Image (cartoon, rainbow, N blue to C red; front, side):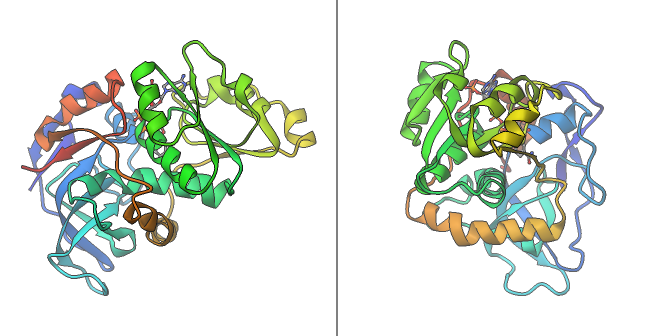
Length: 319
Ligand SMILES: NC(=O)c1ccc[n+]([C@@H]2O[C@H](COP(=O)([O-])OP(=O)(O)OC[C@H]3O[C@@H](n4cnc5c(N)ncnc54)[C@H](OP(=O)(O)O)[C@@H]3O)[C@@H](O)[C@H]2O)c1
């Protein structure tokens, strides 16, 4: 098969469409003939040499795919060869084939095309695991997501709205502001000229910025508020005011999806199937796709991600 390999750490040009060995399914795994994959921040970090591949994971980038099952490993039940699926991966999605534990497979939701389904697993798993399983966002609470126009952000807006939260987001520019409003943001804050701290308090914040926003994020939380940090685009360090944390019973979490165990990923995937897939099938949540490029143009797709003009996800398809 072919896969996108990383020649050496560097810019998008180090991504190469290369002939490599086919994967074989280990016990409990299936092999998927990949129809599409989607870009994630972790792929960029891996390309730059800043994100070591977790032990046992495929060396190729790609944390989610859609496609058709082409082989079943020993001990797999409930799935058939030829079945259309999407999957949460620990790596290896930028390829023609990928092996994945059966616990990380999802049915393609009704009403969603097979290519589009590649946009769902990583963003939905990130949002559900952090916003619901960790931060326990409840109906009627105020939720702030930073970067509402991004791949994670567009999913977070929709899921939070479907849960009955009041949704607030940071976003840049008039066009993206209009898009995030369509997706459920009641309050939009243009982070280039406005300060989200002036629009709080927030019960739950999902943060992709990290250090630069830490102090203001904590200040902006309501009593008993929960901050979950999943990205560090704004630096690795910040000031944490413990008086705010202790006396206002605020919590700060940091998590990564990719390094979670297979058992934890399977638990999250089962929760998606139970709670988020019905939201998708009811039309309350949908995959938001900015562009679809051929897999061989992964370098161009990474450049688009760096340019940050996109809304939602950038997909790569096998031709
Ligand atoms: N820990 C985990 O498990 C996990 C899982 C998935 C993703 N992530 C991380 O989450 C982040 C977002 O991922 P993604 O796939 O959604 O990437 P993306 O599509 O590139 O989105 C990035 C978003 O960040 C926004 N942004 C940039 N600077 C900002 C600022 N100063 N204030 C507010 N927003 C700002 C951008 O907003 P504009 O477009 O409006 O400029 C953009 O919408 C990445 O850092 C990724 O690594 C972590």
